[in-house]
Amino acid sequence: MKSVYLLNTKLEAMNVKIFVISFILMLSAGFTLNAQNVKTDKETVVFEVSMTCENCQKRIEKNIAFEKGVTDMKVNLENKTVTIVFKKSQTTVEKLQEAIKKLGYEVTVKTDKKETKK
Image 1 (cartoon, rainbow, N blue to C red):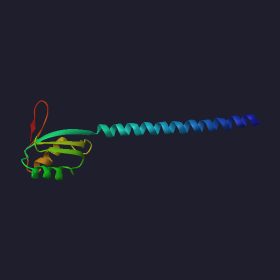
Image 2 (cartoon, one colour):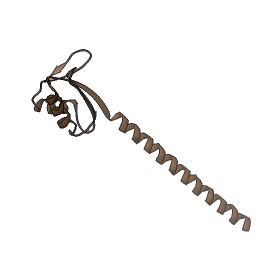
Image 3 (tube, rainbow, N blue to C red):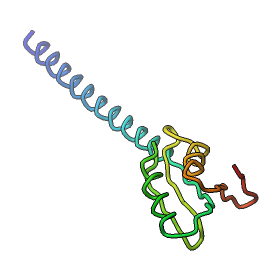
Image 4 (cartoon, rainbow, N blue to C red):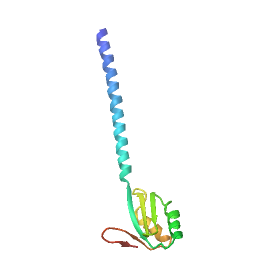
């Protein structure tokens, strides 16, 4: 009878270990999937903007950097481009384009084939 009790105790301990290991594996898989979703949530867009001076550049940098969803931005005065990395879950290309337009600039989305003017 004592050996049956010991066997049951060992089986219970083994079941607990299996449960804990399974739980940890499920958690780590969930974090990995979540991290992949965060990475794919970002998009980059390049705008051609009618800026003419350093004040234009600074105005765009100051205002657009704080738009919802913007994670990175580079303003190139020489090429008259604004490159924005943003979270797709928080904003859109159209909203960012409209934000630059509200500052008083003509804005087009720079693409390989053709440009969209708004």
